[in-house]
Length: 420
Image 1 (tube, rainbow, N blue to C red):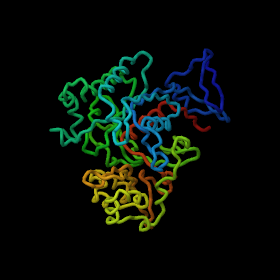
Image 2 (image 1 turned 180 degrees about the vertical axis):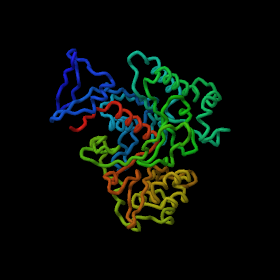
Image 3 (image 1 turned 120 degrees about the vertical axis):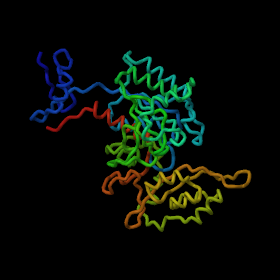
């Protein structure tokens, strides 16, 4: 039976008289590349709406989108919006495990136990083949360890030794090995029917996320756009089989905020706190006008009642390191983003020995241009790009894993009509 080809300036499909597709998968792909000579377009039928599961810990709304220093959304929502930025038609099921931390000083990851992870993935495994198989799962958590603590293993041979390393882990009911085995059973039972995306880990190049030992997973490290070199915080080892953008500028667009650079808002205006971006105080200013000295920094740090003065200046990263505000490890990670930084700390209190006590809540890195004017551009995009005008930023291999999943869905599922 000949197919009835629908001509439309909307998104229609090729069908036969029974309403079913008249094209084979191979023909659909060829058909998608054709266009009618008139103003209408031939549009091929694409795969059904993708089903995605995001497994994340319950966290407080700790992601600052509009850059005013106040939290706006939680991690699970961030991953969802990144994925849908690439593939708007994706149906995403947010699974938030564990219990929510009572404060930002307690990590959301610590509120999630291995038992809860294992139980959930056992449930996924049982559902496979019953019509409830998702196309992809994002599992952006890590249990990381430095290679110096793992005898005979380094970033080059870890993939080759993977099976042996899993066997050497203690066979505890709720240990790392049990989590890896639960993930592996899902991948094996799916037989290629779903993709499991894992983060590489954010503890630096010489670290291992034990979950990456799971065979058949997509382990995603972080890099900058157009660059091959990994970000300084990203794990780099032979288990990492994918690198994607892990540092993203957030820019203001009409109606909200664009995270991934598609030119449209991913977060609506009404979802953010709406204050003025902190970076606005410094960007474009002549460096000597806003740069604080180390002696002044040390004076402020010695008196909690003066902590609010830090909001008025930026400081040399090396001075922040030498004064103990940031660690040597954080300094090594941040210096690739700039030589200066704004810091916001909590506190206003002393310990029992009347020593000042504080916690660094936020660090924003800055560079200067040839004219010694302050620049905020963590993503490293060209100065002529609209993404050069960032108000905030997000980074991490979890971000890179969400980007990788979104890109793959976009390639496989997104409806595209070629111009006639």
